Length: 128
Image (cartoon, rainbow, N blue to C red; front, side, top):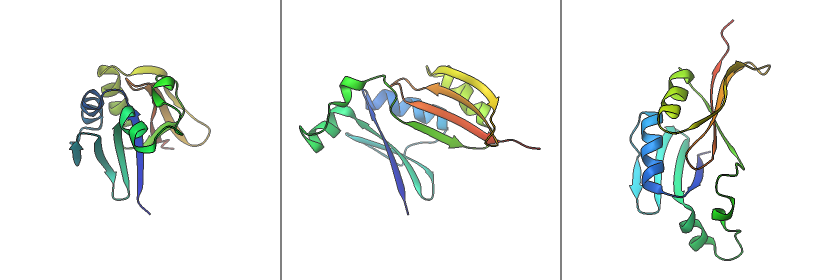
């Protein structure tokens, strides 16, 4: 199964720049209306302007712009060197919510908000 996680963003260009710097990778697709970063073989992170999804799905979709900055989901990235990713996010205008803490589910995790208000968790496995 391939998974596409799509975040609705206010400014596609600014969000693309943020994720390019934080993930340290270029997008595999960057056209008006959609940017994609391949996180692994089966997972793609997409960035779509909120106005674009509204046009695509129509009036039955509640307007995403009315929820701008109100987190409704979390991007949880289990990665090598999560502290470096978290630092890059903060340097690039993410807002820290919680610094790194060991969690009872076996990960050490830091939480932040990206410039659009999406929650990002950078996690690593606790080495025992």
